[in-house]
Structure formats: C-alpha cells, structure tokens
Image: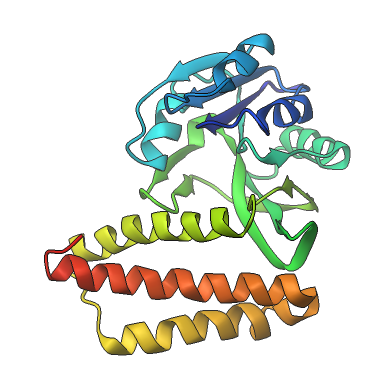
Length: 245
C-alpha cells in the first residue's frame, strides 16, 4: 500500500479540527500547517500526534507549498479543518492511490448551508495528488497544478462550508480584497459595467444554470451572497484604483 500524507491548513479551528482529524486517521501522517492560531487548535493537533508547522499566513499557495516540503508520503491529500472524509470516500481514495491511473484526483464538495448539503452548489476540486507531481499557484483561490492526468472521485467530502450568515458574508468580503488586489496587479480596471453585470450573471449562473433553485431557500441565499461577493470584488477594485482602502 502506498503511503498517504494529509495536509491541513488551520487558523482557529478548535471547534472543527478534532472531527477532521478523526476522519483522516487512516493516513500514514497528518501535517497541520497552522497560521499562528490563538485558540486550542495546536493543542488538539498535538493530542492527535500530528506533525505541526507554524507559519505566519501570507497566502494560501505559500502555506500549502511550505507544508509539502515536509510530507513524506507518495500521495498527499489536502483538506481543511471544516471538512470530513467519509468511510466510502476513504475506500475510494485508497483504491485510487493503488490503481496508478492518474497523477491526481478531484474530490466532490457539496456546499453545506442552513443545516443541509446543497448538491446543486457543488464544486470538484483537485485535492489528492502524487507529491512529486504537484505545486500550488495563486494567492486567493489557489490552484493545484498537477503534472499528469487528473481523475475524479465520486463520493462527496462533508464540507461544513459556512458557520452562519455573517461568517459567509465576512468570508466573501475578505476574499474580495485579495481578488481586487490581484486584478489591480494585472492591470485590470473596474467599470460600472462590471459592477452591474458581473454580479447579475453570477446569480443567474448559480441559481439557474447550476440548478441552485432546486436547493430551496438555502440555494437562493447562496446564489445571492455569491453575487454580492462579485459585486464587492469590483467595488473594492474601483476603490484601489482611486487609492482608497
């Protein structure tokens, strides 16, 4: 059986981390890359015998690339502190590692909001990779670059995405600043067209094209807040263009 390392980036995840660690206890090693948490996150990780790395956060790619240097497994699985690997997904992961078909695999992440999983707001993200064939790029929505083919696993990750309405909105605002700065650095400019049209299209895509309306009121809420996130990004870009933050 090939060796598996799990990498978990954390910051103040004491409420969620224990169950995340339990769900990946089948791994050969667990590495927690912590961004100087002020709660009991590190104590919980120590109690589970994790390899703990402490590093001041600058961006998501650098955190994970740093942790990769310390992984010893042939395969690496990346999860967050609010995610859980189910038994069925565990079996699928182990079979995929053994098969040798691909250099990486995408996992299925249905969003969890208002006490239910939204299967029409689901993302497929590359998280299981051969250690020697991968690296991260990008600072906000980091991208895992894989040298080789990428397959897709079927069983979902349990991802407790948002810890309430205000947490969800706060997360969108935080990402919006990062994204606006990236756009500014690339020489992009915000216009009133971006502010009016882009949020509308994000809502339409999320609620209609992806079938969010089938998820009821939670689907409507997620589509609306996603549209707000896009609106916030371009407003912040416009502020940065004017030298205001």
